[in-house]
Length: 252
Length: 261
Image (tube, rainbow over all chains, first blue to last red; front, side):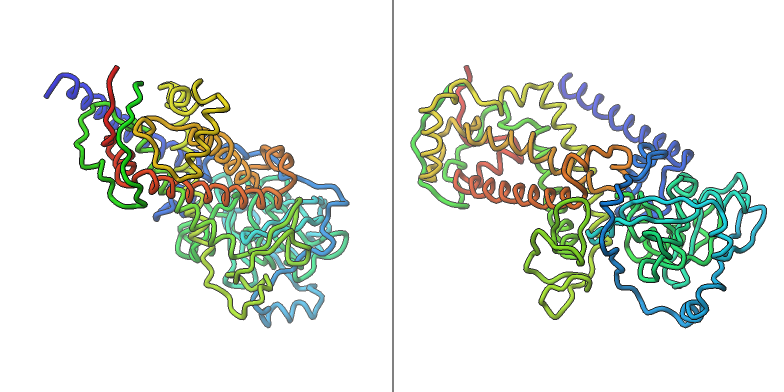
């Protein structure tokens, strides 16, 4: 072996060792700072982790783009969904007077909220875009209570890391980290374009998350759990979507 | 670099090149290791992005201009293909299986690999002088006569001279530069402009393109341009001696003799 090839081998070996060690340190740091998504296992785990970590670092406090009133879509598309359950129809026939949002988990004051209660809290509105992973989108004015307000009322405990939220449709549940949960544009939306939120768009109550793809904005929200560990829910991938092959983090 | 004009081998398309029987003796590789490795990673990435991108498109094969677009708005155009979701009326009486989940994950993961590979190539290309030496048009290229000669030989599908096996001709240089410095940046930019979270931090990325749906339409057309480039690239490889060119890009060796100065 010549000197040159020995040196080359040595340099390559050192670089490889440094690379592996660097990756190990990066993985531990990412875990520590909450930059690893719950669906990081599997063949797409690398991509999911890189996207989530990068966007979490870049967009922790950034605001979703807001639009002018004249940019609101004339007809907000109510896309197709599975048939509504009998439980939903019963509540609908009562004008949603009995609709409740229960909040439990790592909170000091677990309880439930009626729509009237939610509407009595300070409200905000945002003219933002809803973009579906299929490729279509619309802009609407969304009216509601910032999720952070309801979480404050419930009193989240310091070890809280994620909010898991459930639709009345048992197949649709999602979760978000605290950066998204406490983000000023994350709403419990009950109104749209000046009126009540139509059922086709997720009424009477939809979690609105304008910095992620539409499937994270769960329609017909009835239940919310504050947790420090997503492994306790479903298959432990964070939400229903990863179980169906979709990414947990959908900022892209 | 000395130019060696040797006897022209008979033109064969995608057939073994007789010249490849000549053993390669030169120690200098035709393409550096870094160019070869990044070339093939990019090739794999391209096909992964093409397939996954196509799967994503068929879930909504309609394109729009501006900020928003959906089945209630007028499209710019609609691809005459069946869709994998029932929201879009396609005229076909069936809905293709939904492949959006893994397609999106594969698309974004591959995009990461492609972008990081591209960065490695870009940085090393600047430091090794690859762009300056191999890709920027040579002084001798910049005459009207040289330009028309290159065009004419391309139009005749003439097999390139042996000298060209050691360097790129003007059209190659211009198309590679266009792909590396125009199409790649544009496809990355328009892709990021569709990301709701990314544009929340960098809104100009999407407003400069005219809106989120415009970004999606631009992304589609730039992808088509890249596909066209790959097709022409492969045809040119076949015309100029498939085996020899493949060998040069895989092993770095080429059968074309080179006179060392």
